[in-house]
Length: 247
Length: 228
Image 1: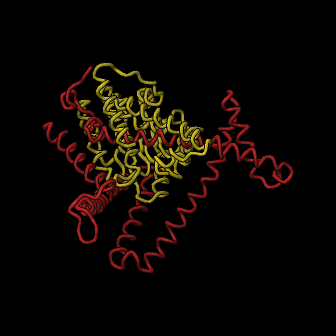
Image 2: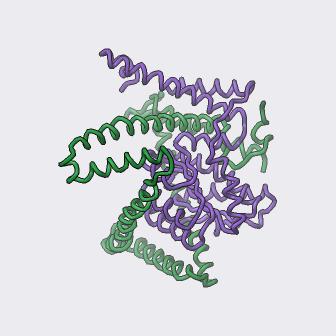
Image 3: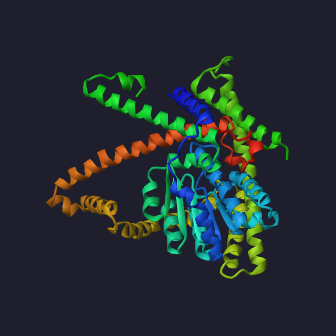
């Protein structure tokens, strides 16, 4: 199955060279300039966090997806002159985030405006100490916008509610199923599961990268067909599909 | 910085490590040692050890960042902040001194951890109940058809969890069981499958050098030139 998805994605990349795939609009990502613009108008900072992500666990892809958005938002902030605060849970992410943000400010021609020790803040490696610290930043510095993309756990509700109370416009994205409903009811924009992984490709505007999303959708069609066949086969007493998938 | 250092080298490192780790998961590549571990298994263990070492180093980096940030607030007497910063640094120093001299498994360190962080952590976790209540209050307001359905379903689930109501209306159990077991589970699985495919796609993009978000925004030249 994995090999099949590889084939689909490579095919999608090849096809995208000839014909540009059409994308469903992701309103959450389209709203990023609006969020940064709001922070600029209100002369208040923008807060960003990637949750409890670690680069060495199964949630690493969510973290990488969050960092792709971080790089994009940092460039917007540098251009608009908005102070961006990145709250860090895992210290190992700090050097990467610092480089991404520094790079964005250099490209915007304002390297002197980037203050790493003030904008990339290591809070704690403990879940609720980190959660309390983020809430403290929200209450004291009152960011105009809050972006949360990555793996979130119990702290998702604490963040979303606190930032909502202080009037921040919020974008949240996670692939953790249990936290999606919390974000859905509180945040202004939401990226659900696969949408956060597509964020890097979506924001890059690179046709070949976009082609991988097309390949991913072919994988979804296959998954749907397999589900349908599995339901039919099981209904008629056959276990061929479950045996094939090793379930 | 040259393109080789900025783009090619990180992508080559990512590709080689990803291939080794994936090979170890799916295959047993010879040579295999007496313990039955292939060379990829040993390589992955070494990589994990390197990961632990790098994480430990980065923790030091985090601690330095913490000291820089909070000492600045203390020296400037930032309103509503400096006394929290001071208290944080005092606590960090106390934990570090006890941890280094008596060990993180000592009674003193355990007592300090359990009596401070553990209790505070449980308190913050418990406060989640209040946040959920205010979130639910906001969510259960009828603004359109979808929020109306959400309200009805939410009230049904709430009613099912109230023992007094399920005694008089046992049908609530069947209704909620259908909602959670069939409707919610099927939607959750759809999200899970989509998420898994998205993660695979991201992995392939990263390995082939198309996902460059974690390297910063590259120029067209650095990305290998725009196509189409």
